[in-house]
Length: 478
Image (cartoon, one colour):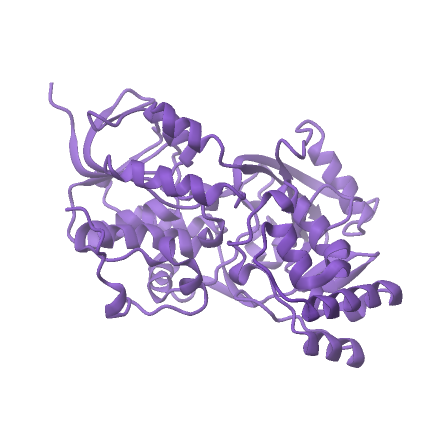
């Protein structure tokens, strides 16, 4: 019996899979199929409406872009009028007060002795001869000094990654961490002046309706039905015969496979013992997303805030988003209800009790004065993301240098947040463009800049098509 055969199969309808599929179709590659286990598109960027009518994202997503092409797809998804623009207001809650983010640029908010400890450490760090950091903790201490490391960066990063910073490499940092300028820090302290606007996402936008998931559902709907196979994920993969089998019993053959499911899971499906052994050493954290819907309006202290970081141990979460501030349509009764969304990380180094995590989050919100003891909670929503953060561990790059090329020898191309396991290029724009760039490589032989040169991509807004020098991939396999 002949099987449905495709030139390209794409696994997963998150941002990467959708980017690959959309670009393949634009390039005239119509012999391709997108397979998604869920009924809806979006992957980790999907959205959910709970029983009380509150909309929740699967984590704290915002829309900003390093790419002209990504912005074109965003306009295709929601048009020009489907967005709300925001000026970022992100804060750190510590020492019983809010400090503007980034913490290291706003030390004037700290108590005097701690302020001096941070400045003294920063001065000493600036005077030292730099050496190549061995890990992320080493990089933090070398770059910021002992005071800032101990006050904020080490406890916060332990909380968000759920691994000690010494277990992470320092190659991923790039634009993700604000490196302080000593002159600016001292000016802020002397003038008692906030510096809140650092970073690539100091302005961002958010869908007016439907949460972040609306973007990806609309883009998926633009793909013709004959190129979509949803609600039926794969359960077996024969890399030698180039066949996949789905939970529903469907079997498809392929010439080339684009994978966006987690790399460790992909290797287990293939069954190659060497790939399994290597990929199983990749580290990741799970994330518990907890949504708290409330009656009334946010207190004045939260009225304009976007998200807040929490390095201290009086709460389980590392970040809380005032999700109703992103769009009034994220709540069932705009003006009469509001919402907070918390994220709690979990790993073998930091366990979480799934049975009590929602109650623990509520207690933490009260301890940090986000809500009062008598706050009228009308919705408690919880989702555990098994693969939440791809951890840039010290051994990650060596593993990827072996596993990804070994897969490509079998015409399997693994991309995306967990498909390529590169946190530094795992935002929605990065993830989608990994798919777009791979499609360009497979059809036209172009380079994949996002995967191969994250620092280059992250330091600018990238025109489309990419410059001529970036177009030829000398390693193309015909």
